Length: 256
Image 1 (cartoon, helix red, strand yellow):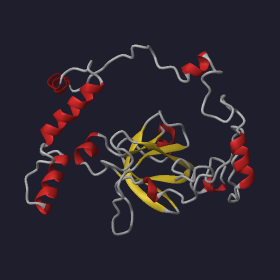
Image 2 (cartoon, helix red, strand yellow):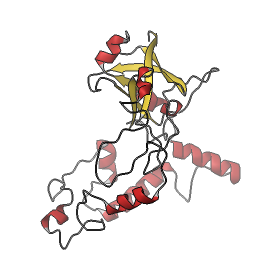
Image 3 (cartoon, helix red, strand yellow):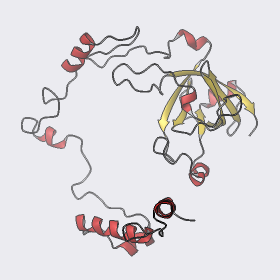
Image 4 (tube, rainbow, N blue to C red):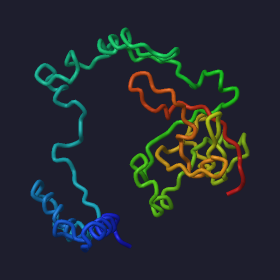
């Protein structure tokens, strides 16, 4: 099996210049050795290329001990201020207070200068929970960088996309670990396998973000794309995709 970089170099060079898979005088092996040699210049304490290739992973300890957040600031806050308007840890943010006063927000959205609890769209106290009682949250999946590598078969097999659900919620719905389930709301439907685990709190289910959309003829996704279920209501401050705040229902589709 060829590395993706090797395949790309072959296609690019042959389509444009009709040449081999060599790029700038180096093939895949040559680039690996060249880039590692450049890394060794920055850190000569690393083992040589052949040793790293044989070991696979190189582990080292920080000579300065365990990492301490804001260590310089804690030792001398006057001479090592933080990157905030006051140079200190800010519980009350004047910048957020200004934004809250100047921005026009949709009804129900809140930006507050203090770290307070705010009811959010499709939150735990939403009236929509009568219809869709489970809070769906997204998380960064270990087999992808967002959607990148989401089409790599070996990674999809090694770390399968599943919806995590608490045993209490699963039992109420007749769902067992590995069962095929459907996750749905008014926006769409996803069919995927269930992972029943006490690591999820009751009332909350989770789905790794970044899975590629794979719809059937009825636009039902069969790859676990959380975007199918996600609202287009942006988060108040960052205007980001609200993948942590979506209400859904889950039912048993058929046995896996």
